[in-house]
Image (cartoon, rainbow, N blue to C red; front, side):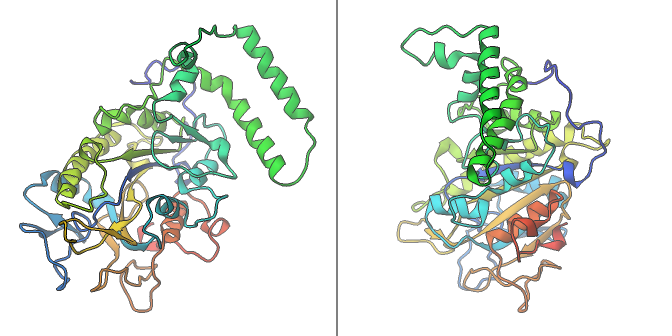
Length: 408
């Protein structure tokens, strides 16, 4: 559903665009997408067999795997290859799905940590109503929990806002409190928060976080009936995330996260019949064309388009082993690839690479090229690059980790 009837200021739209205003759309491919299907051609790897009919194709200095059964892949790169960069050879240092999800999004296995979407949202405008909108998929927050708003796996946020969580999801009848009663409850909670003693440490952090969330609550309630944040996996991906893109355009959110599981929600975890990856990627890139077209059709803050001001991050939690197993599938691999498209990206390039054993090759961060004197790429380098794109000093959160400068 569109937001054309939303009566509220377009937060930040009057300001000139700058890196601090840049938005981010994270599209997470659940299960471990096979990078050799599209992003990482293996034609130069003598010990890795190629998919029959596949060829390495180039759009400028950007190469990808082209195949007649995946025409949407070529369509995407022909349309948006000059605004895209592919990052190869990141190691996530695990092959367990849940652990890899956290590692690719935070760079660490520590429990108390904020992921890249949360950090970007936390360092954006303080006026954002839904700073980091998690439509679906994994999310990690500790210091900035109040910046994260989950739509809920079945759209619970919308149900809480419009009251249907009580009327439709309960076997006991409930009456919503009146406006005056709700206001009295809110005032009481605000007073109790103000009376809490000020202390250093986690308690004060939680109180401050809760206070900021409560301050936004009355405005968030106005979204009821206007923004459809339900999660309907029966819809195609572009339709499923339309409201999230609306929130980016209107300045309600700085970051949005959505999960994509491929054809029929099968997931990319293809331990058998790896050819399913082909169908997943063909559908995905058809959707990416639609999403990029949509972003390019919407106005940005400074006379350009929303795509000019948004970085689309297409990622997965792990890679897949380059060789087929006995079930003609591919098992988990600690190295993976990521694609970035949109504003602030020096597009039409490939950064990093894989060696003959399909392990990440050392990469020079200044040029993005594989070099013996370079560094092994980790998820932290992806995070540092995204923070730099968001006009945030990576050293504040990732000391000792530099971004890939050739992308900026």
